[in-house]
Length: 256
Image (cartoon, rainbow, N blue to C red; front, side, top):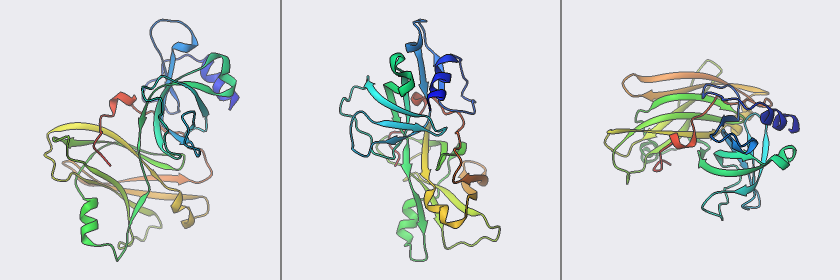
């Protein structure tokens, strides 16, 4: 942990969004020193006591503590287990302790895997939807399947639904776990592009294998129909995510 933080402070490099490790960092204007280095990357909140001074853990295992905050909402208390993209600086006098100043934060849509069974009603299936999306990127980070996507939207009052589904009524013979990335646009007109990101907790799937699972994710995409994407979820391995966009790039406020 201390080694990771010291390395982060010493290497003040501009990292592109294609970087393969997190956190991502960039040098802001001013050249005032370490306080100008702003970091961001996908992480999981540790906040069992629901407090404002919480911790978060990046998918590469780096654990950091929010001890100062520039958020307008001084009572912001993210839920334990919430996925986030924090935007922060490391406090110079507390680098080895992993204390940071939180500048801004984007809450990633965080959900479990929804299961279709023989008893699932058509009304529930319809609510999950099967409308297309534009897939930008998909990867396993820590114990989560992370999906960056674009939806075509029009009316900000209409909520779109995003889910990851395990359909137990379908059978496959390839010894892989098949999942479906689903979208319900609730009849919103496809007018303009909105980018979002979602994380799905894969830990409930661990009982199906000893140390890893081969995943096949089915996605219905705009213009091309259904595509499949294969990934491996390794239970005991820290799996750093690929670079994510800056929080400002995600502009979906009406997705759940």
